Structure formats: structure tokens, C-alpha cells
Length: 275
Length: 290
Image (cartoon, rainbow over all chains, first blue to last red; front, side):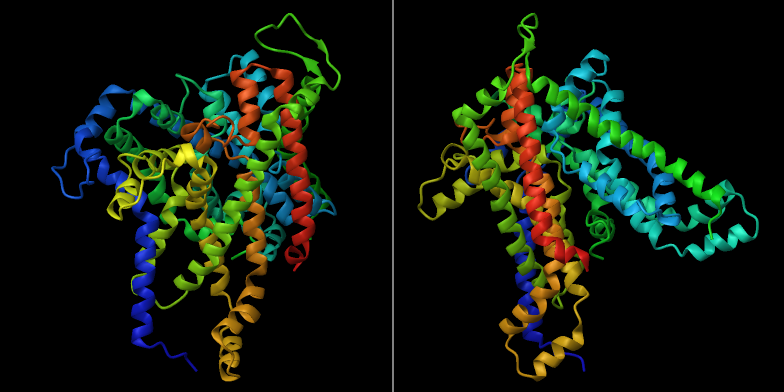
């Protein structure tokens, strides 16, 4: 028996949901709107909803401030650390999912527990180590650190996905005499690709937005967008329109990626506990 | 059936990540413990040596320390309260038959994908600014005095910003959990004449227990280390009114160059995180077993 949904009830919930949704989205909407205003319009009182739109801010940000360098740093750091971590994590998750030992559960829990360590607990030695190695404020240094930070989550996510591949298929291929690397390349990878892609996507988002290590370990050279935007917090940098334009460009690609990864987000970030 | 050959091989494949994570966990932590007993300031590097418990005493007797601990716990619990209660209510709402549900979901989930420095600066400048901000205009419209958010209620302001970032996460997880709710159970309760509230309390909430647990665990891990939002809005101030433990250690290390003191603070943060983790896992362990 389907439950009756009266029209009134449906309209009421729809109105409420849209209203609250617009409130949640408002800060983002307002930022995008402000990015098309002149600096004077941006602080007009009362606030302007209709105004003469301009691309000026985008041009200024792109021309003046090495924006593309910071954007490139973000791409290299988020992308590089994710790919590097995947290369280490795939064999690891594969072995734990398909030939588990007595200790596999413990190993997984231990890996997760490394995530419990607060970053300030290791801030000082990491900072000093990178300094002595000449890796402070370099993309290499940050790629390594970000890879280590996200490795446990990546292994967990991959493990969760790999767990769902029926191991009988692997056994069948083994019976047919497939050697290990063939088993991985021709059997496992095609089935695991959706899971690997989800992991990649989600981790790109997390790494793109990471704002503890990127702020503390970079300066002028290797700073990604998180750190560049933070430079707008100084009093003399209070140009709302330019801040908005720079911010909009910094969040747009990742936000759109995020829209398509809602499902993966749930499974991935809850380590498969909620599906 | 895996052969001995593949078993060995699979263990070898697991080794790189285990070794990496082991080094990542042990070496820096060991160094932090070592530094925490050293007199070591980068401004006076020649004055080094064993310092006993001095760094810990100095860090703990700092008047800012207990405030920082309090702020850390307030920040975590405040954001958790808002996101869990809000997430359950919004989850119920979004689980209804709604016109354009896909787009509404996108509106709700988007704040989660905004980098912390961007969301903090948008809120600080365009919403919470006491003169030009939207909230000031709204207050004026109703004839009230605008609030200078970061001067008067700095910690609460940060809690609001962080809650805005994490509410989508809680909502999405709880909504997903609700979608697996047994419809027939609901209908049976309907037939027995159960009220909406009774159904929520006896059916929905128990069903959500596991998801709520997961949300609390994951959010706590991230919320204990909130940093960027404080850095770009208040710098921990006014005074130390919005300094949490993470920010206090950062301040010691990278602004005062006090390696020994910052290390002691870092170890205290690790201990705090472990206490919270033990409490959480014990309190919620039952839920995760199922």
C-alpha cells in the first residue's frame, strides 16, 4: 500500500525545502554575484541585487596576482598527492581485500587510527625536517606530506570498494592459469575502476581544500589556492569584488566535481558504514 | 583458494603502505616528544639542552591554555550539536516527496566543497561585517543594532561558519541512512495509529543511530583540528577568546619559534585527541559493531 501524499503536503515540503536550500546556498550565491560588481557596488548600502555586471575583477585577478601559478600549485599538489597515494594504496587494499590474514582487521584499524593523530602533534618536526631537506615551500614537499595524510582514507575507501568484488571471479581466472599481473590488469582493474575513480574524485576534493599543511608549509613559491585566498584576510587586502572573483574561480571546478560525487562521498567518508 | 605464492606476494604488496604509515606515525611523533623536553627556540638556537618538564609546565600554566582547551571543546560540541540536530531535521525534510529534489540537494550539499579559507572570508566580510555585511543590513532593516560578530562573539561566529560547512555532510549521510528505512515498518506503525512523533522516536531515530555515530566520529576528527577558519577571521582573538589548541600550538611554533614549547603543546593535543577517541569509540562502539 503506497502512502498517500496529499498535494498540499507535497507543496508545503517543497516550499520549505527550497527556502532552506536557498539560505544554505546564499553565501555562495552572494559571493558569485559580488564577483561581478565593481568595488563600489560591492559595499553599496542597501546591498545591490541588480547592477551593471563587469568582468573586470576576473581580468584583474588573472593579470595582477600570479593567479595561474597558485592554481597550478593546487592542481599539482592535489593531483600529484592523490595519484601517488593511489599507486601505493591499490596493491595494499587489493591484498587486504582478497587475501586477508588474521591481522587484516587490526592493520586496517591501525591505519585509520593514524588519522586520529592531530596535525599539530607533528607540526614542529615536519616543519623542521622539510626545512633541513630544503623542501619547505616546495611542491615536492607538500605532495609527499599530503599523500601521507590521505593514504589511510584512500586505502580504506579502496578496501571498501574491492571488498564488493566477488572473489570467485578472481579464483576462476587463477584456475585458468592467469598470472598475478594479468589477474590485476585484465580482471581486477576493469571491475575496480569505478571504485578507483570514486576514490580519486573524493580525494581530489579533500586535497584541494586541505588548509592546515598547505597554509603552514608554503609561502610565495608553492602556495596553492587555499593559501592565496588566505592572503586576502589582511586589512589592506579588503577588496571584496576581487576576493569574490578569486574565490569563485578557486571553488568552481571542485564544487561541480562534488555535485557528481554525492553518492561516493557517503560511502567513502563513512568507510562503507553508511551506504 | 589462494596459493602460498600469491599469499606471500600479497603481503609484499601491502608492505609499502604499512612501512610508509609506520614511519609517518612513529618518526615525527618521536621527534615531537624529544623536542618537548628540550630547551629549543629558533631565535636563540645556541641555547639548547635538556629541559625536563619545564615546557609542559610553561604551556599548561599559560592562562591561555585552559581557555584554549575550553574553546576546542566548545567548538567541537557546538558544531556537532548544530549539525546533528539540523542534519536529522533536514534529512527528514529532504526524504519527502519534493519537486526538484536533485537541485535542492545540490543547494544543500555545496557548502561542503568550499575550501575553508574561502568560506571563512565570505562569512567574515560579506555576511558578518558590522557595517557592510548582509546581517548588518538585516539588523538595520528591523531597527536593531548591528552586531560586531568577531569582536563580541568571536568563538560563536566561528562555530556558525564551521557548522555551515559541516551541516551538508551530516545531512547527506543521515539522508542516505534514512532512505534505507523499512517502509513496511512505517506502514505497520501507521495502521496501529502511531503518531508522527512516536514513529520518529521509536523507528527513525534508532535506525539512524549508526549513521549519527559515524557522523560524530568523523566530524570530531576534523573539528579538533580547525585552523584555517580561525587564522583568516580572528587570528585567535580578541586576546585569546577564539584560540583553540591547534591555533595555540601553531602560534608557539611558527610565530614565537618556541620549538620546545610548541612540541609540548602538540603532545598535549595528541593526548586530548586520544582521550576523545577512546571516549567516543567506547560510547559508540556498540553501534559500529552491527
